[in-house]
Amino acid sequence: MTSPCFKRTLTVLGGMIGLFAGTCAHASSFSVTPTRIALSGKHSAVTVRLLNTGDDPVTVQARVVTWTLSENKEVYQDSDEVLLNPPIFTLEPDKPQLMRLGLRHPRGDANEVAYRLIVEEVPPPPRPGISLRTILRISIPIFVEQLGAVRKQLDWRAEATPDGMKISATNNGNVHVQIRNLSLVPEGSTASPKGRTVLDYLLPGQTREWVFEEQPTRDALKLSLTAVTDAGNFNASLVPAGR
Image: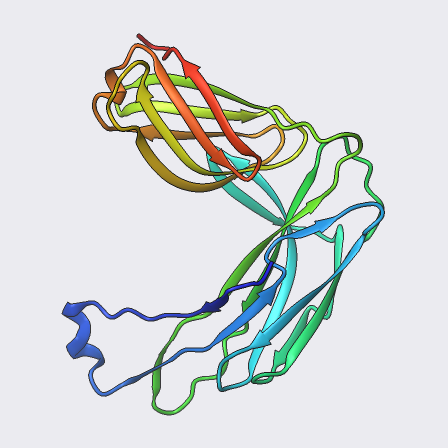
């Protein structure tokens, strides 16, 4: 997959324009490929390519973190289970830098294991005439292949709550699924489904939740759900709990 160029951008609110009048903001950019990393017992190492597409040198540091979910929020913790080299370097303009990642030890887990590669700029010293600067940070998923055949299974649940219709999905398979869009409509209705772009990963054993506040979704006695994912479409007929 070809990576898009990740760029830092600066937005100044209307009420703050006067405060920053006459000052300069610095921005740079770099690209990273691949944007999703797969490792396995047979392919335990990979090369990542970084390219500085800006005009100035950029010092970059990288680290690998474990990737879990707690209370519907992603949690990262530093890990030494995936080695990387070099962990810090300077990107010269238009000159590629290669970084190598590899498993410290072979894994034999029944479920796919997930990490993230965090690549971020080291803040440079202040420069004359530049008073505003944003720091670029990129997070790339790393998936370590499970033992045995791939099993993709999402189990869905609906619950009526005071805030709206809460939809939850539990990944009871052994590999990740990336949910890209959710559509919800009362079963039998001719109304257009209430769709939502989510772009959420669901790792094995994890549960995610989304709340649909729209009417008549929150009042329905039975719902039809369609989830568009990187593993294909999932469809479910749901009877909300809490009625």
